Length: 431
Ligand code: ASP
Ligand code: MG
Image (cartoon, rainbow, N blue to C red; front, side, top):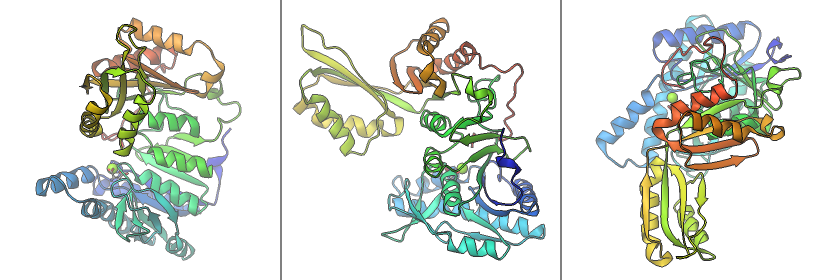
């Protein structure tokens, strides 16, 4: 059983996403919730995201001024979204008779490297937050931002980065728990927007959550899970629109929990990747190294790689790999540059692919998961184009148009379907 949520006095970090504070009403609802936690005797630190679609709107606005804003100025602009939220939330809390003080990421001591738009947190020195708590105030921190140690410029942590702010602060403050409030009731066995019968998970391990987040599940930012695992900080993912118990992200499934028996924790899908096939590559030592070195030198992240057996007659082979669509243009350009040197025939670019991933620690001890998965895909008429596996994950690439059908079929094949729909989607943005 879980004892974690029965603490009576502690330090709690609560993070509210953009859909929870989309308007003044939302701010007030969230403020009431924060105050209730404080009244229950806890010290409370709140991390907040920009209201609704503010971040997207700010990006659009920047793009209307220039197609290529500099990282420094774009970060300065985007962090304004979270500053609006933190100040309004502090006002809403003070209206309820409690003292709240808002802090920018920099004031809260979130120190990062200087990679604008995807900065990594290197240290958290939350002196001012501790001071505010000691004086009985609720601390509100702007998520998604920090200050570069070298340049002293304001940075952002990448889209969805407020989760990471919350977990990093919780770790630095030695909090009892980090609660991530979102617009669904927790982590589900599949995206409830796709699978109506998706089940809410009572618990999920850091390891499983990392694989799910890396495979396209949008409920938590990948780096936030990495951080939580490093510090063994429990995360409670739940809805700000209900008081339902959500999903606990923890080191091990609790004893006696039903998840122990489940083979598959969840199914994630991702339509944000593209596939590049390099056709007619000479099958010689060092060629693959040359190709992927060129890709790595351009800071392009690749996901799956498949190399075919070379045709005996020609000694030529094909190499395919997947990567974020947003990096497809750069990757193609890099490959064209080395085409003459490497001597391959051509490059094919395909952005109509999707990925389906099955994740579960139980896979380790259960043979036959792959067979069940592939049989379900075949029955659903989903053609498998690429496969990759880890110890606790199987992913396939298929046509983008087949993804939803494939996810539903796999969900049914692994008996994950709930008897009646469990998921309520309160917001709409998926964050
Ligand atoms: N506001 C930022 C974004 O939309 C950060 C976040 O929501 O976590 O990506
Ligand atoms: Mg957001």
